[in-house]
Image (cartoon, rainbow, N blue to C red):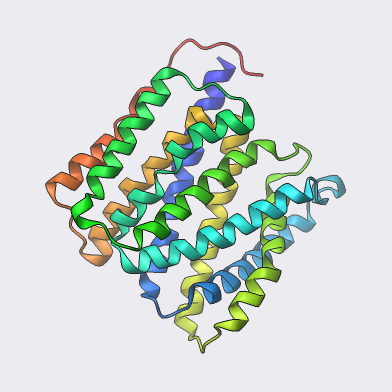
Length: 286
């Protein structure tokens, strides 16, 4: 029963996180390429540090400490690479198409969870993830391939590594501390990259970046909580829920109406979520 409860909560945490991440994508789309990706990353990470610092200061001394610095440094730079590629992909593709590639991440998480965490996903999870990836291919039909999809694929890879590596974070490092150190450790490289491409920026753009920073912080926090509660191979497919959100946002904000084939692809991506959320008798969680 405990395992069921933990996995169910983890699934809902990821779904809520993907709603937040989808809204962050909307903020990027609204920027419409007016801010350089490196400049966007620098401002977003700086805002992230400012937002989370007061919460970090309220943590216990042990929780505030930086544990496993190498792992945290790696995750910080995965954020830089993934975020930069994400800005390029969303700017030049529709929200649904870009995110269809982003959500190849759960497929990548299966082999990564096996290699990094020694996890053994159930056959049903493997088949469900493959079905989801088939949906991704349907949405992103070869005839509509765009060069920016390569950047989206890089984002998917960094996202998969970021989420799976969360399982290796020390338990004494809290979620707040994890978000804080991930943001802080990304600042030096982000500063150097932004300085090379700096350009004037308006108040509206800063507000959009700030909103995106807060929304992605929410996603990252919920993802850390989710992947600490359950194995990546068990809940990673819940990442696909974001595709529904961005499709709806694309329709509402940008008049990006998906055709019937795209709708079929989205159904293939979403349907595997349903069996995971049905109650089953499971052994006790560790």
